Amino acid sequence: MIKIENAFLLDIALGYPFGKVWFPSDFPEVTIEEIPNTFLLKGKQLAGIKRLVEQNDSTIARSIEGLMNRADAFLAMPPISVTQKKDLHEGTTLNDYCSLAKYWWPNLDTKNGLPYIRRDGEVNPDCYNQKYDLNRLDRFSEATLILGLAGFITEKKVYLNKAMSLIKTWLIDSDTRQTPHFRFAQIVPGRDAERATGLIEARRLIYVCESIQLLKHANAVSEQDEKALVEWFRELLTWMLESQQGQKALKQKNNIGFWVDLQCLIYANFCGERNKANKLIKDFLLPRIEDQVDVDGKLKRELTRAMPYDYAAFTLMALAGLSTSSEHNEIKLDEYSSEEGRNFQNAFKWFNAAVHNNDLQEPSLSLARFTILQQELAQLREEILQLESQLIGEQTQLNAEADLDDEVRSRLTERLERAEKENGRLRAELNNIYRSMMSAAFHYRGTDFIFEEQAKRLKELNRVRNKDKEINIKLKEELDQLQNDYFKTLKDLQSQKQENTSLQTQKEELKLELENQMLLNKELMKRITTTLSNRVERTENLLANLTKQLESKKQSNREKLKAFEQKEKNLLDLNKKIKTLTRDKDRYKRLFKEAAQSKTWRYTSPLRKVLDNVKGRS
Image 1 (tube, rainbow, N blue to C red):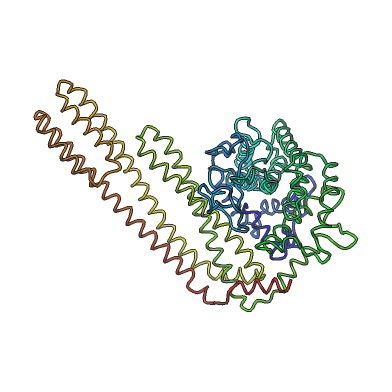
Image 2: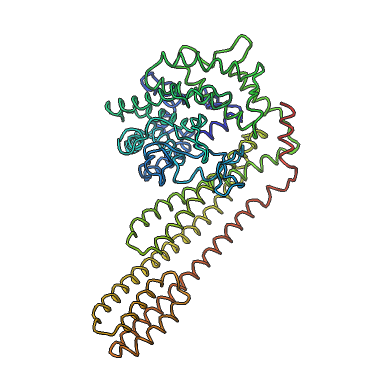
């Protein structure tokens, strides 16, 4: 889930879907020419925000600064493509989108873990592995939307050009473009069936359409590129409507059905096929509302899930998107109601009432949990960004060090795989924290009080955070220096190996026994990088034997032995320093966590009682 969806979910949980209430009465009036033809975001509001920015309005400055900071971070991001995955699933090509079903896990009752089994509500961190495309699609859709918004509001070409470059890589360029289908989305190892539920992941492309609309308004899309993009989304829409997977997804009786409706509606409007969009609303969306929304607005099919309120909010987000995007069509969902009164407004009112009427015994517990989760969320985001940068750096380093021996390359590969697993684990934890944040928001709607409390703690938190950042920067610099020294030592060892090989070729007149000793010496040198603990003793024994047989080289070999001993000592010192730095880092993390949690968890009443209370009232 990309970050803008988390903002939409929080708005829905607090009672304000898609930013309908915060705009002041004196919000700037804009002309039709200034309004972008967006499908989800309010084009008139975006144009008004742009006007406020041009007027240097202080009320919007902080938000725009945050947007530009996010956009600046994406400027350095390399191009993203489905062709960057490591392994291919059976039957796929590099250009096919491929992902792992989130709630499916290895079967512990079988030796090979197949077939995978379902655990509803539990995210398998392997779905964020680099051999799948979900993580790349997340970053692509989020980056293009943020850059498109920043480019539209600030009119800076650097944002517009970067967004268009990412879009061309993923959707247009023949070597890197995704094939316009999601046939292999959310695969389940050990099960051959192609899954209709995988189309839920394609929803990220609706935000790409939003970005393209903003870029078109800013004249950043060429006529040729626009035709190519329309053709790509037309092929995707055709596949979703005519393929077996797409037709099955359109028949889904839960949130997936609404999300597929939203995608088809936006893609049809994006391609200029308004008649098809109107038909989609009549044939699929309106019957789905009749079937899934109760007369009093209750979303009955979502209440049987493991985390019903999460899924209900997720469904309402799709309905809110449908309500906004249907403004381009004949039937406006915001105005529609069946004869029995089934409509989007009732669904939202039911959900809002269920949240609002939940009188907590200890509301401060929800506030405390919400505050802590915000801090953990920020920390996890930072760690994930650092891990992703580290993954890219180590991948580049691994490619650059292709001439190293097999043992060094193997160790670097293992480090890279461990980093990927840690990245997947953090993303799974991030997903769970998002869910917990939603639960906290459901039980405490006092956003003004939250912001007031946050403002009181902001100064102290910033001080601690800045101090931690300084420590982390110093630690990173020292670790980088240690890493540079490590690889410099490896290069020196390689040079020494080459010298030994040259020495062996010059001593062809020696006896077979001397040649065998030289081979042992060369083999010993190869093991230096992995057997540091016993290298000195073996080197001394080998040099002692060589001294007896090569008296003319006695002084030279002794000097080399001393050099090796010095490097051995340097490497041991480096390892000790790394361990010391690691312990310090863990200690600082622990101290920071204890400080963050010292006051907020004094309440012991479990949150589960509150959730049970919500279910009982609904």
